[in-house]
Structures are given as structure tokens and as C-alpha cells.
Length: 229
Length: 285
Ligand SMILES: Nc1ncnc2c1ncn2[C@@H]1O[C@H](COP(=O)(O)OP(=O)(O)O)[C@@H](O)[C@H]1O
Ligand SMILES: [Mg+2]
Image 1 (spheres, chains in turn orange, yellow):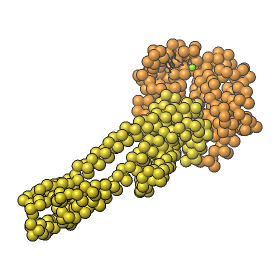
Image 2 (cartoon, helix red, strand yellow):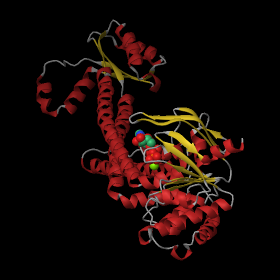
Image 3 (spheres, chains in turn orange, purple):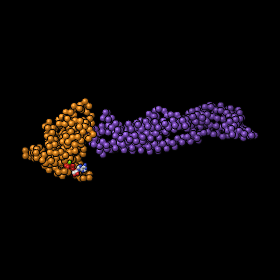
Image 4 (cartoon, helix red, strand yellow):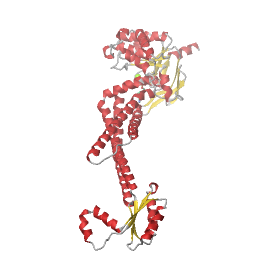
């Protein structure tokens, strides 16, 4: 579903960000992407969204290849990805429901289909009562739930989360994480970049891809396969 | 396109001054073109009237025999270039001179003999009122022994053509300068609009809006700004026409399709300027 084959990324000014990274995320799989700040986690997530192209190697996402994808196909790929950030990225001048509806509107969805779908998703993330609130009137955890609802609105194959709990307190962190687990249980893949070690320790049975200085230093899925092999 | 339209209206609300400034800049550059159109159109009409009077005048020697003149008139009239040939005798010429120059009546009356020559005035058919046509007829006239001198108004027909060229050059420069200013103002408006919507645009991209969808509100804004500019130009040109027509010089108003074309040019200009600017600025978001 998502595959990186010997991917390297060199930024013109800051130098190499990824060095020969290969990894594979299957449909329905859940994986943590971890490592210190600057290790290359965000770069991997941006490569998957095709917001960046690898300097060498190939990124494959749901049948699209970074070496062949055309500019006009990228929006179609993005509709199959739900993306969440540490800083929520909500539009402050729009209500909760408008923020979620926005993602549907701009992909040309029918008006009649938007409102019931937004209502369902807000109920799913537990924010139905705050549909008319503005982002500034919500707590951090609530804002991130809005972002999750928005990420899910186009029914993506995978949820990409870049430090989604970085700005949240512990209670909100676990709340969001449980939401991810639910989403994953419905069959959606989740790739979550985080350096929250307590979270990793709390859920030790999930796959962890560890990165340092642009390389994958440890991948619990690969270890598992070696054990089996 | 409900989304683009909503966004465009929002953009007008956000920065009405900037939109008006863009529209004014387009309006002024088209106004210059409109003034030129007005001048050229009326000059063209004047030129046609002058051309109707384009004639070749042959001054005759005093010694000429009336029968030779009649024979020449008949032969000239048969030429394809010639519409009419009028004989003006020495007496007719003197009478006309006294009528046209009343201040000199006494001078003319005191003369012992009439100094003015008789002449043949040859008027040309419409298709031959050109330098070449005039020259051909003049050549014919010069061939007659009794023709002393041939005059025709080519010089100042040429002068009008060159005046029109000078005006066109001036308008190209001034209009071009205004158009450049208009393009810069539009680019600035687009830059401000893009940066005001920076976050929105990056989220649109994130959730998979197409480039066309993202650009459409900006292009629509450019188009509407251009239409406004075209309307402003039409209004200013009409005002200038009324003022000149009532105070200085009788003018004829422009054909209405020129107005339509001018407004269409404004709209196209607004659209294209936005398209160029939006491509450049969106790349930086
Ligand atoms: N847009 C960019 N331009 C230049 N360098 C970048 C850019 N994004 C990231 N980098 C560099 O790439 C490296 C990896 O960054 P990043 O992927 O953001 O790491 P992480 O998300 O693990 O903290 C860092 O050295 C960072 O400075
Ligand atoms: Mg990061």
C-alpha cells in the first residue's frame, strides 16, 4: 500500500534528510514512526503525500509512483490520505463543522452529501455538540479531534499523523490515540510519527519504525520477520 | 461555481480598495486607448471628407484657346479616375478670390489686369483618391502644352496620416505604461489575496483540491476586476467625448462594438494578469 524503496532525500540547503530508507506499510497496518527531532520522520510523511519527491529511490502509494505521478494526479492521491499535524491546522474563522465540510467542498463533493457526512464524523470523534464552535473556543484535544474528523472525511486508505499529540496533555493524548485505534480497527492504515516514548511503552505490541539521522535504525516488523524466518 | 464565487466575493470584501485600484489601473490604460479610438475614429471621418474634396487643379496659360480646353475636358472626363472636371475661368477665379478674401477686395479692384489664371479642377472617383491616383491624373494634365502648373493636396493628406501615426505612438507608450502599472497592481492584489489565504490554500492542497479549483477564485477575481476596468474606461471615454463635443469640437461617438471589444479586452487582461500572478505566487505557498 505504502512502499519506500531505497529512498534518499537531500534538501538543497540543509543537506541529506533521508539516506537509503526502505519500508513497507500494509493495508490496515498500524505503525509508529519514531526518532529524535530532525531524524526525518516528517520528511517521510511528506514524501508519502508527494509534497516532496525523493532525490533517489521510489515512493509507491496506492498504485502511484513518485517517479511517474503527474502533477494533476497528486490531488487524487491526497484524497486517499488523511493527514494530521501537531498544530491542528484548522481555519480559525470557520466553525468546527465548516472546517470538516471544507475538505469535502474543495474536492467537489455534492452539497447534499456534505452535511450528513460531517454530522456523522463529528459524532464519531465525539464533537457533535460543538459543531457550531470556533476552533479558538475548543481545547487542544478537541481541536485535534476536529482535525481527525477532517482527515477522515474523504474516506482515506491511510491516516498519516505527524506528532499529533505533541501539543496535548496526557489525557487528551490517550483520547486521540484511542480514536486512532478505533479508526485502525475499521481497516484503515495508520502511520504515526511521534517521539512520545511513554505512548510507545504503553502500547508495546504495535510496530515501531525507529529513525536516526535519516536512516531507519530499527523496525520491529522486520525483527519479527527475522524471528519467523 | 458557488465556491469560487463565494471566495471572490469574500476577496472583494477583504480588500475593496485594492480591487478598485486594480480596476482603476486597467480602466486608465483602456481610457487612453479609448481616447485614441475617439481621435482616430473622428480623424478618419474627417479624412474621408477631405478625400472627397481631393482634386487636382491645373492652372492654364492665359494664351489657351477655349476649344482646346473643351477638348481636354472631354478627354479627361473619359478617364476612369475622374469623377468631374470643372472649368474655372479667369473671371470666376477673381470673383472667388474677392469673395474669399474680402480684406483684399480693394487690391483686386485696383488691378489693371486680372493676375489669376483660369484652371481646370479635376475631382477623382472614390477608389482613386490616393497619392497614386492623384499623381496619375496630374501627369496627364502636365502633358498639355497649355497647362502652366499642376497642384494637388497630397502633402497635407500625408500630413494627416503622419499626425495619426504620432498619436498612435503616443498612445502606445502612455497606454502601455498604464497597462504595465495595471499588471503590477493586479499582481500585488493577487499576492496579497494569496497570502491572506495562505493557510486555506495549504489545507486545500492537503485534502486534495485540484490546482484549477484553487486558482479559480483568483482568476474569477481578475476577470471581474478587468470587467470593472473596462466599464470605467468606457465611462471615462464617454465623459471625455461629451466634454469635447460640447466645448471644443463636434465629435461622433464610437461604434458600440468598440465599447464591447474594449470591455472584453479589459476582462481578458484582468484574467491573464491574474493567471500569471497566481501561478507564480501559489508556487510559494
Ligand atoms: N523543507 C525543508 N528544507 C530544508 N531542509 C529540511 C526541510 N524539511 C526538513 N529539513 C531537514 O531535514 C531533516 C529532517 O527533518 P524532518 O523530516 O522534519 O525531521 P523530524 O520530523 O524527524 O523532526 C532535518 O535536518 C531538517 O532540518
Ligand atoms: Mg517533524
